[in-house]
Image (tube, rainbow, N blue to C red):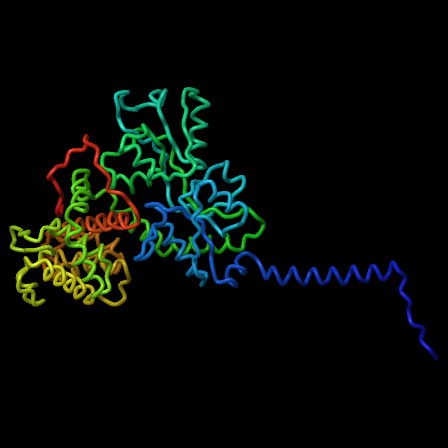
Amino acid sequence: MRIPHPHLTRLQRAEVIALVLLVVVTLLFVTANPGNTLQQAQNRGELVVAMRIGNTTYLPSPEGATGFEYEMAKAFADWLDVDLKIVVPGRFDAILNRTARGKVHLAAAGITITPEREAYLRFGPSYLQITEQLIHRPSETGRIRTIEDLADRQIVVVSGTAHIETLRLLQEMHPFITWEEIPRADPEELLRRVWEGNIEATIVDSIELSATQRFYPGLRAALDLTEPKSLAWAFPKTTDLSLFNEAEAFFVYLKSTGLLEQMLERYFGHLDVIDQAGMIRFLREARESLPTFEPLFREAARQYDLDWRLLAAISYQESHWNPNAVSRTGVRGLMMLTLATAGELGVEDRLDPRASVFGGTQYLINLRDRLPERIQEPDRTWMALAAYNIGMGHLHDARAITQRQGKDPDRWLDVMEYLPLLSRPEWHSQTRFGYARGWEPVQYVQNIRAFYDVLNWLAAGGELGRMPSSLQIMDIFPRGL
């Protein structure tokens, strides 16, 4: 018997064609969207992060990028096993807009959590508390001490920042407050303009002032305009929480392991160790003396695989870049080598700049290599510097005390807390090498880190500029504590 062949009506054929097209479109969509945001980032092998260039965020340089936000973002990319791709929009509000539109995976730019921003952005865990501060340069109109003193003042702020929201709230209660917004600027630029006297006042986050006033001595906060606020990463506010949830897990890891605390100490724990006079002198010497010895630091750094700016910072702390420096204890030269250390290194003339720089660099490398392999960078370098100042024996004593107190002897953040105890009888009597001025290596290392930061800033395009005449150079500089 013949089975009749079904004949499709025109309507049925149209329905079949529509179904086939739907299947094809669905397959194309699935192919083009191979998963959620986290899976897409991992499939492409990159995490795209919006940043801004600044002392507290991201400083690119030929020798390698640095910065607190950069280091956290790099650690998150490593956590995801992908590369980090950094996008730097020209305006702060562009960072927020690109993030909200999903053009980047997240923004790591020192972003304050505010109610207005929470309407269109999703914020990750807070990692730092700040206050918004008004910075001004006293003039013939007098100092700013209260909100009422803001009447008829020239206040300039960066467009798109949380400071605009703060000013609007203040203006509701104090209508006399006015301000000017600049789109293509950054906090450091406005602080510099205040320092130079080109504008009267600006508003920055407290961490921005702390990180920048080293470069512009004399800057001070006139008013705290807000209660403490939280900084956090910003994400697109979508229903896809895959990457956001992974970031939350990442921050749980950072906080529970102490890594976040270490990063905060690394970038912000030494910001106030150099006084105003000391920083003015350093900036002057960086302009006048450093160029003479920079080729030596660069050559030694290449030979021993170090950053020349670190060597320069050590040398400044030791001798203020004076090749003929001699201390009361007999150490000499740019790197202030002892007679015994110079003999071990084969340095015949400690006052010879080249011999001193290469000898001091070799000594630092030797100390670093003597530390347990498990100590990671940058703690390894900070501890080697402490040993450069106080001796390896006393450093080991301090590490032993640190361990007995239940802290980590391999973390500089912990060891620096217990080094000063070496000067107290109840502690140094229990050690192998006895008494030491344990506070000195702490100050020594923190000073070097501060100088190193400034040299990094200069390498990233910072300007020495002309110091205001109101800031007098003083010959007081703290070497040690």
